Length: 254
Picture (cartoon, rainbow, N blue to C red):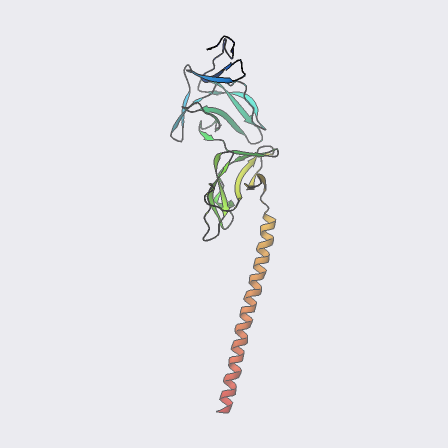
């Protein structure tokens, strides 16, 4: 400190964890002005477990400090190689999560398949107590007229499906405006059931995809189409009949 009347806080003995550690030191002047200094210290991990996911290198986080256990998951320990690793298990969905850290020190949850040893990014949507694990949608489940698009949820890019009209472009950014409704295929992490869900990005709500409504409007459309075809057929028959009458009258005159 430049002045003896200033107060310094945040110093002293600090415990380092593996990876990046950030500490704040604050200096408060006599007039109340505060300057904050941030010290970043990287502690190397001894014998790190390195994995590759999507062409990028990650290390497995074996020890977790003050972590928040994901909703509907329980903390457990699994073996990866010969090492004990902290993991999170959901018995309803039979899904296991582990924490992976990239080269910049960012930590994220990843699905871990204990049979194959493969990892995949854990995408989920959690709204009003409903936690959904997003999974790839089977082609047979994609409704007619829907196309694959991406959208943003909590600053994460997520793949979904959207009903597309000709001449309208849909995108996940604000430059191109499209519908605010996205269709996703997910597992309810509370019940373990798979299904289609509709996400409203404007109001940040999600609900199950109601096929009954689609069938209702489809039936109405089919009926309207049927009535239209009947009207067209009746008009054609009327014109043919009118033509036959005219032809008959002309023939009689001859």
